[in-house]
Image (tube, rainbow, N blue to C red; front, side):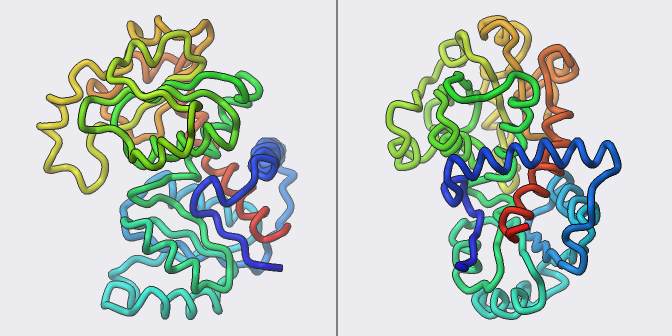
Amino acid sequence: MAVRHFLTLHDLSPAELNQVIDSAIALKKAHRENTQQPVLAQKVLAMIFEKSSTRTRVSFEAGMAQLGGSALFLSPTDTQLGRGEPIEDSARVISRMTDIIMIRTFGHDKIETFAKHSAVPVINALTDSFHPCQLLADVQTYVEHRGSIQGKTVAWIGDGNNMCHSWINAAMQFDFKLRIACPVGYEPDATIVASAGDRVVLTNDPAQAVNDADLVTTDVFASMGQEAEQATRLEHFDGFQVNHALMAKAADKALFMHCLPAHRGEEVSAELLEDTSISVVWDEAENRLHAQKALMLFLLNQ
């Protein structure tokens, strides 16, 4: 059987993605009831990090342990990847010694090259272009709180970044409408937007995007590697904060999500982030653990 990778949400069919979501919910229940079986005993996950992380590292490492396997943390300072070894060579070697690999890096082309030369499944744990694992957790969270996301309306407020790109992919794969509100000059990649057809609507008005939406989500205004732009971006993103006033324009029982870490008082108000009647960010963060367990089991045919 050919090796399956998960570099974007398009690497799985809609039916397979929903299968992973259902599995994640079941795994979460098993974990809480202490009935999880060590189905990945003697399996090894290689975790390659070129960007810093909290949720990604903890969720993958803890998830592998809960499934009975083990995880190796690899950074450029610890490996030959940081000393100029070709990606192709590292992929061939690491994939002969481990069973599955996750990579958190910068350019999406790097993970594509690695996957092309890997003998085992490769998971995108974030690139500058996409963050598909976060979307699995986000959709799982919506399903747990409100049922199927199919046919719903989601509003993305903020930068047209890697998270925004993955929400566009999710709109296609999970069959919902996505409204994106970005300041002028910060829109998502036009090719990715065009691929979604009429599922995606772009605007520069947050209120228009949020109007009657079932889910509102955002991210920091300056992502990793953009810290030097922070002051400029704060000026350009003035008026794009998600707060109770903006959420009041959404549908009844609309949820708020944020992939974290959050900058309270910038892209989201502190009051909204902590309002558990609307904000489900802590469930969303926990679900990275269970969604990724389900993904690893799927890719390893378990």
